[in-house]
Image (cartoon, rainbow over all chains, first blue to last red; front, side, top):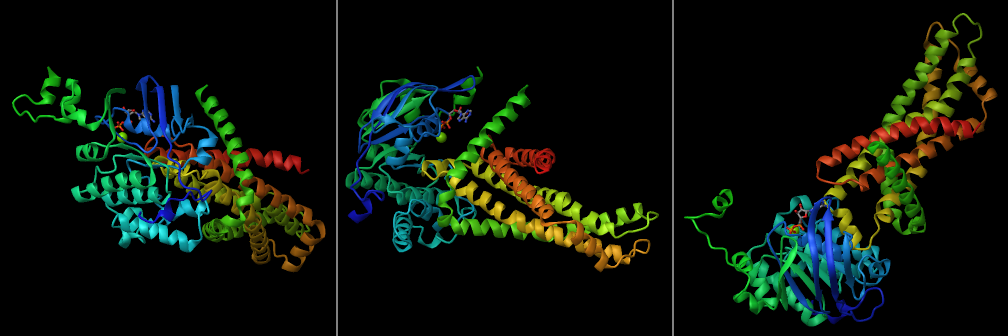
Amino acid sequence: MADPQTTRNPFTDAESQAVGVEIHDLSKRFGQVEVLKQISFSVAPGEIFVLMGPSGSGKSVLLKHIVALEKPTSGRVLVDGREAASEEIRETVRMALVFQAGALFNSMSVYDNLALYPREHRVTNEQGIREKVMRALQILSLENAHQKYPSELSGGMKKRVAIARALVMEPQLMLYDEPTSELDPVMSATISEIIATLKEQYHVTSIVVSHDRELALNIADRVGILMGGRLVFLGPPAELAQPKDPRVADFLNPRIDLQNPRFKQLET
Amino acid sequence: MRTLNRVLEGIGSTILLLLRSVAYLPTLPRQFGRFVEQCYLIGYTTLPIVAILSFFIGSVLALQSGYAAQNLGPKQFIGLLVGLTMARELGPVMVAVLLTGRVGSAIAAELASMKVYQEIDALETMNIPPARMLVMPRLAATLFMMPVLTIIADLVGWFGGAIIAKYTSFIAIEPASYFATMRQYMDFDDVLNGLIKAEVFGFVIVLVCCNIGLNTRGGPREIGAAVTRAVVASLILILVLDYFVTKALM
Ligand SMILES: Nc1ncnc2c1ncn2[C@@H]1O[C@H](COP(=O)(O)OP(=O)(O)O)[C@@H](O)[C@H]1O
Ligand SMILES: [Mg+2]
């Protein structure tokens, strides 16, 4: 996305303003289960924050709070200093979430999936939309898939379409839920480059949920590790080299121990 | 107690959805494509079956009333009976039942699957309200198509009755006198009455089916459950509303 024109806010035509996220004492329970336990951290405008953690630790739930798809049981989630769930934020801040499963519109072609946002918000005319969409598809090597339907795509392609759809929104705040988990190493590197480029050139704030250590080490400004609903690590990626917490160390460098496998340790 | 809670919750969320969707009515011109698509879908899926069933309902009405009137002398009133019953009652109710089966169930299934596969969540993060994009065009299309379908049902039913009245040996009245009594004793208000009913049924069915679809929670299994709930709720509502609308229009 090298053309500076495309960074303009489609609503006001003004340059995008980077927005920050603050999370204060966020707790979330589903019934009896407390999934997030008093989480606090903030992400500065233009920062790339990588969130890691074992599956089931509440990463996806945390992201959903930022786009107001879930409401906190207690605590506050602020975007650009205002309540994330407010109408005001919805109207004024462009946020995009790349869902873990893609969440593509199954009844629409890939092209229409990408074109829906600019069409609905009447960003430009059909010609302008076509250019934006084809450019986003090109970046993710999907030019040949634009007429396909989601059911005709592989898992990795769906993920890339989801990322492309988010790019077309030209968001100020991008949230990715495991964007590289189904991709080959080259495509994963491409995604890392896209995230880094969005930051460098357009001051897009990114929160990336990922298990991809390459991604975390190369592009993250800061890393958070979520375990059992608590934030057990928060710091620059360099600190991940020698983590103090043994749980973090084991999560990052799990040794495959055939003599004493983990599932057997659980049994005793 | 739980069921009651759920019903009350359902009523509340349906009213909310109604208000939201109606507020998006001004966006209809620029969603005209969606409106036309929904009209086409409603017409395409229900028209053939509406025509076939109303033919048989008109026929059986003529047959039954002819049978009952065998020894009563003048049988011309059969035309009036079929005419009134079709226009005021069976036309709209039958169209509503078929709309539930063919359109309401499809809407519930589609929206439930969009909800389960997070497509609705995706729309919300894109600041595209589902009430605007998914519900309003469907409601508008239903309001547009219900009178069309009902008039077709009435006409086909009347003709079905006329044919049976002519060719059944113990009735044997000419279509001319069948339609003459119909024209003489029925007026446009009777047809209008049925059209109003049809509009109410269609609107409520589509609204309720949309709401049940959008409020689906859980995994893919819930899609089937949502469809069942939508169909059952619609059928109950048709019969209950039928009484109240009939009463209100008297
Ligand atoms: N809507 C929900 N209702 C009940 N439990 C949920 C819901 N969403 C997530 N959970 C639970 O919250 C926990 C964290 O889920 P999630 O955030 O998806 O984990 P992950 O870190 O792998 O993304 C899981 O135990 C999951 O079962
Ligand atoms: Mg997850």
